[in-house]
Length: 215
Ligand SMILES: C[S@@+](CC[C@H](N)C(=O)[O-])C[C@H]1O[C@@H](n2cnc3c(N)ncnc32)[C@H](O)[C@@H]1O
Image (cartoon, rainbow, N blue to C red; front, top):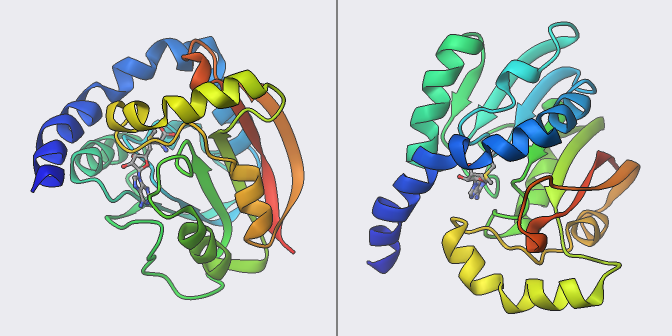
């Protein structure tokens, strides 16, 4: 009951203000990081938790056989559909969560997640699904804010503020050690860059971006 009220009020507002809330961060460097990451997309591409579709215009024009986007949140999905109709009418859109993907095993060459593994309620299940739908030589392209590993004081603040931030951030966990999650799920990190989410509160600043394969 409370969950439904939260979703109908804050969830709706979060998606309505998402693009505006991220504007300064996008302009200060996030868009460029997205662009760099997506240059590596190839073949059959699946993006999970696509949100309002901020990555859509950044996919390369060459080398993609098809693009499928999933997003479970109905408010985000509505915006995603509107943007895809304008910017990428050929994309397939599916309303689904990453923990239970409606795709066959070994379907995709590339899976993309940007700022999603912090939010999926069950990260381990989502990573199992990614590994299932990826082809054996497929790649996971990721851009995720993570738990601070080289600043114990910041990590402590991430733990302390996890609950209020999760409420404000529509389910976002600011203290997830996503690289450990990837390794634990059997991914091998091929390329990795550690950076910061520009113009973001310190607890969500540590960022990792890169490419992983199934080991
Ligand atoms: C911070 S937003 C990021 C949106 C988009 N990927 C981007 O880069 O702007 C987190 C997204 O994860 C989505 N999400 C929440 N639960 C999810 C789940 N179980 N599976 C996939 N995506 C989920 C949210 O609806 C939201 O769109």
